[in-house]
Each structure stands twice: as C-alpha cells, then as structure tokens.
Amino acid sequence: MQGISLEKPAKRRNGFFTRSSRLIRLVLHLLLGVAKIVLLFPFAGQVRRAELVRAWSVRVLAILGVDLVVKGHVPDASARGVLFVSNHISWLDIYLLQAVRPVRFVSKAEVRSWPLIGWLAEKTGTIFVERTRRHDTARINKAVIDALNQGDCVALFPEGTTSNGTLLRPFHSSLLQPAVATEALLWPVTIRYVQPDGTANLAPAYVDDMSFADSLQRVLGEPELVAEITYLGPLRGQGRNRRELVALAESAISSALNLAAPGRKPGKPAGPPGAQP
Image (cartoon, rainbow, N blue to C red):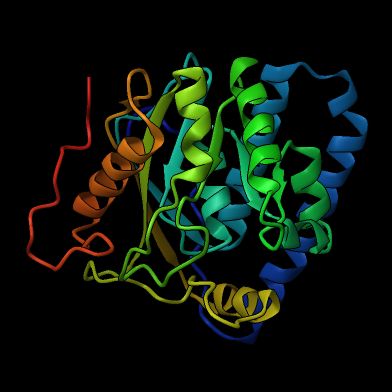
C-alpha cells in the first residue's frame, strides 16, 4: 500500500447479528452522508468535498467489513483531468475507488433510483447514462469532456456491466472518446475480491438478475472481505484514437488479472504492455 490510510474493519462472526448490526450502521451512515451534503457541501470547496467523500467511503468499507489493499502506481492529489477505467464486479467497486482517490463516476441510470445511495451518487457528481437510449453516448461524452477540462477525475467501467471477477467482458470504446478529445491520461485499474488462499471471492459479485437487496445481503453476511485494487501504468490519449486506447486498456487489465481478454484464447499473449509513455 502506498500512502493510503484506511480504517480497518472490525472482525465479527458471521450470522444474523453481523448482518443486522452492519445494516443498521450502514443506514445511519447513509443518513449522515445526506446530512453532510445538505449542511457542508454548499460551503465546501472542491478539495474539502473530495476529503469528505473519501472519508465517507472509507467508513462504508469499514462498516461492511471490507479490508482494502491498494497496489501499483497510486495517483496522488496532483492528478487532475484523468480518466480511470476498471473492470467491474460489484457496486462496492465505487467505494473502493472513492476511498483512494475521489472521482466522478459514469454509472447506469438505474442507480439514481436506489434509495439514498442514488441521491448521494447524484449529489457527488455521478454522470448517469441511459443504456436504453442509443444516442445517449454523445451527451455523456460531452459531460465527461467538460469534467476533464475542469480538472475533475472521472471513472468508468468500459465493460458496461458486471462480471463475477473470473472473466473479463468486452470493453466498449465509445465512452473513451473524451480521453482522445482532451488528450487526458487514461489510467487502467484492476479490482479483485479474494479469499484467504488468493482465489476469487464471488460473494460481492452483483451479476445477472440479482437484485441490489440480494447483493447487499450477501455482502452483509460475509465475515470479512478482502478487496485488492491495483493502479496500472497510465496511458496517454495524445496521438491515439479510442479503439487503440480501449485495446491497450483491455490488454493491461486482462494481463494484470491473468484473465483472457475478450475474443482472445487463454494463453495467447496479451499484447501491448499496460504502461505507455
């Protein structure tokens, strides 16, 4: 871990008490987040808001018993106008990334309807995409370009959906156009949830037709979750088109996770390295 101070989760036994205790504390923490946004955000600058979001996210992970391990080229506070891209497993992914380096997210519009969480996401700058609208990409790209030009950092999941962490879905290049338009750094990140023996922990996976309530219950019931995020070498958007960038990002993430890139047979070389000058 490189300079990241995180609150260690308390170890509890599995069972009804664990789930109930965590759920109560999570709801209270969500309400605290609402209060801070209403009372503090109107008077806070960009740096202070980022500090509040990071501290709040760290506490979410502690309440849920998530032990976060951060590796790689961790961006410092001076990183501005960066587009982060990551594989996507769970709704927890958002809090993992926010606990290290607060960013604005590009998220599916359905999240906005989630009780409390959707409102909090909107108020902290999430950009919502309507996946059912074919022409919504242009609007989203403009919003991301504006955010990057203002110095904001933005994170998105180019798979467009989640997996259980044992595979990688195809990356979509359309939402990487802002990195080309602004010549911003594209920073690949990997996310893993692991068992003590290093194998994938499937409990946090929010996949298929699973409801958010069912996913939350699974997470609440885990005695302890270990999450690993690794910041790979950043890629430069200058002089590259979005298809080149998405191929480089997909290759870097698949190689780091030791997963076959979509459309590539296991064991075939992954292609270009993750870190590009």
